[in-house]
Image (cartoon, rainbow, N blue to C red; front, top):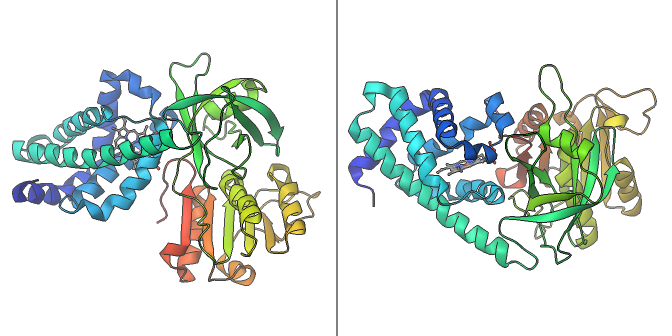
Length: 401
Ligand code: HEM
């Protein structure tokens, strides 16, 4: 429905906008939050301060604009982002607001170079992209609400049990306050917590992976307490959960979401590689696989600092003892003198991976940025094809380059 001229203008200006990307997004968020302060309840303000997340949204718009005459090419990305949007409760009426402020920012940053034709073409293109998102998200909200035990926005849960897993990680077992059924989920998916923290000016939304296997009468999340560290402030939500939320307390969460989950149809061996608290979705995958499918070999590789922060140590040990097809490998970069149960000191590298796991496996990896880069590059160097490399970043999408 876009004219050839519009498509031409949009495509030819993408590089210009991408180059000024940071200025545009900074301007965009500043003005949008000034005029719609209630949107601060939706966006992660810690990421805003760190300047990381803001780029993701605008970059995705540019990527879409590059394929504006054939959006099917970016539908997989749209599907993926929509999972996150659905769990955050992004609504159709939000799109025109984002569109308006994105255009304003483009105008302001480009100055005279932003002719009326350019602004008009971008307005039209944004409309087409936004409609693609709105349509996909409509289906997702419908599916979430109509699923057995499912719900659309947020639902009140209660902390049934709080269990310390390591010096920094604590699990919360959550049960629906209405006592009714729970939606199923795929191992690897997450929920979004909507935290109303006393003393805070706005709501805080955060994603946490479900760390247990589906099919129980609770959801379990396992949260790392993010302490203040070298000028980086303590995590608002993780500190709140650790220090102020106890057994019996209420918590609002979204229905499970996310496209990082174990492919249960595949017959390949499974290699699960985690760094630090990135182990939570992978613990769920390992447990689910041992319950539902005992025909695949599972390699569970976990890298963390040392035994004091190593969560689910006993679960890992127990699973590898109980199931001959489960093999665990533990890597500590700074082991303590009291640590004895680990397989490698240092970091993951390709030479070591080659020795301990089969290349024909399906790989799933999750952890902090530096860890992700190492694993990602190693697997590419090993020629593991893209369809067998599944990963999820914790926090805003980092860069693998
Ligand atoms: C996250 C793209 C519209 C709210 C994201 C991410 C991308 C993205 C790429 C990061 C995904 C991830 O972390 O996995 C887009 C595009 C849009 C759009 C291309 C328009 C076509 C909107 C709208 C809203 C919204 C209309 C609501 C006002 C959010 C929020 C996050 C997010 C709250 C989470 C990040 C944070 O909390 O800082 N979006 N988005 N987005 N989006 Fe959108």
